[in-house]
Length: 214
Length: 214
View (cartoon, each protein chain N blue to C red):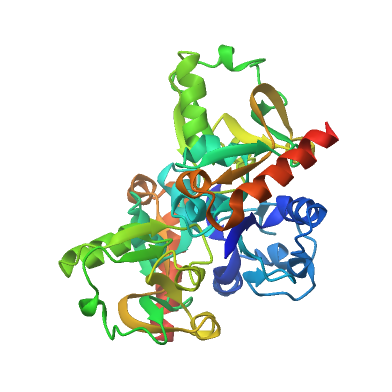
């Protein structure tokens, strides 16, 4: 059965709405008290798994899901071996460098060598500072990166910014944008090439939907 | 100021209760709607940071927190450079291998070579199967590992088990226990040796408290 991996959290609602537009209803995931991590939509054609954002490409890479919806930030950080099929447009955010409001640095270019930078996205950060030729010391944190400059574990952070509220609430300001991110439809490369379980039709429907919107 | 890093989630309540027993009140973290990640207790002597379980040893390793409370499972998985000071006794759980109820394997020793095992604790798992001389293929998932055998991404999992309810609800059974875990008090090694900010007294009070209970 065609299987899609959906990311929990911010992308879930929009992902479900998009599948509804092509006649696949996974809205059961949004019912209160719903604990199941796996459902089949009412027509019985397609199964959906609800997994963590970062685990979506793992399920697709191992072929346990034919398709997945995941943020570009995850793809850029983990570089999984999946086919990037469609830019879905929703789930917009950016990955930015931020420092304390009262920091003397206006841009990452001002950062001194060996400054500490905390992030959940250490690969993206490493690449960015490497390209600027600024050797920084990266501190991997699994969450609440905005706490870094407050506690002093790092002078700067690289983090996902949606509205900027979290930064403002923690007395931080953005200095640089590494890249912009949106939700992407990804697929298992071989399954896509072989059009397993009618995967190609679904991809084509989603592609048309997205193109119609633009 | 003496700073302690507390783990969010399951260990938080017990950690706060323990500090209350030695006259340090961080119960403000438990107030509904509390969003601050950093507070100073009423006497103004000690500051606490509320961070993710996995980030506690990072804060301690970098010396941004003198002390931290974290599960032994995290210490065993990440091997951070921190001093293990006191076994606090609470937060008990075990790290176990589990398979589907109808699996033909009774123990990890029955696993065929190159079987897939999903886990958030890939270092602990690698070491365990290496010691058994069973070459398995480890799949790192960031959460909801119990979904592994259901979706077919892996035949077995290695996961943290508290009551066993999650395993039962997902049709899984334990085959082997890798190790038992409890909450540990850890410290920044150099700060501890130099007794910075009266750190030694706090450690001694906690040690006496734990010894008295046993």
